[in-house]
Structure formats: C-alpha cells, structure tokens
Length: 125
Image (tube, rainbow, N blue to C red; front, side, top):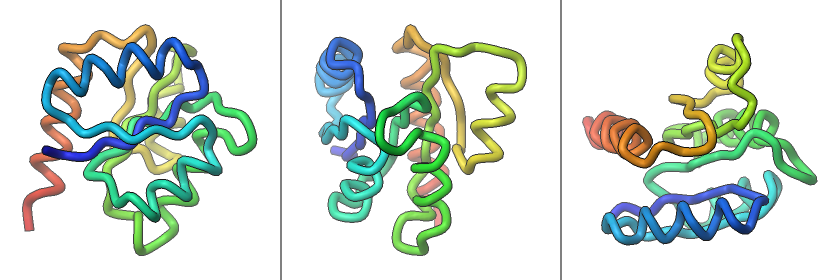
C-alpha cells in the first residue's frame, strides 16, 4: 500500500481527498503547511507527495524546491496542486521541481492516472 503525503491547508480539501485516496488503497499522511510537509517527507518517506502550491508558512513552490534539493527526498515524485489554472502555472510547477501538475478542484480519475504513472516510474531501477 503506497504512502502518499498530502500537503494541503484547506481542511475540507484535505478531508475529501484523503478519504477518496484511502478508499483506493493508499496510506495517507497529511501536513497543513509547506514547512510541515518538508519535515514529514523527511520522516515519513512517502512514495509520492501531493503538494498544494498555495500554503501558509512555506509555500508549495519553496517546499518542493527544498525537497528536490535534499538528496534524502529528491527522488520522491511531487504532484503540484493549484486552483490557479493560469497559463504558465504548469511550467512554474515543473520549474520548481514538481514531477507533474493538476488543478483543483481535483478530478479523481485524472489524478489517479498521474499518481499511478509516477509511482510506476519511481519503482523502476
């Protein structure tokens, strides 16, 4: 059962998404801000991180750059989540180190495809 770290400050989004992913067989650990997300990525060693980009204390852009710069967490795939579906946001997420990007509100089928693809890639030697 792959462990996913969900970094999301909105309680409603966190609750809804975590329950839907748990029903699909994932173990979910959660953080409410970017700094807590970085600390939990280091301690929990999740298989994948869902990172909201608009977070308090440390935003998702900075948290992702921090994780990708650390050899202990750099290989963990990160999917950036943002409600700001503006042109250039995908590129900005990828430049920050995200392995993929998705928009909110989350369409679960599309997100699950991205999660499955990244988990399969990261499992390859």
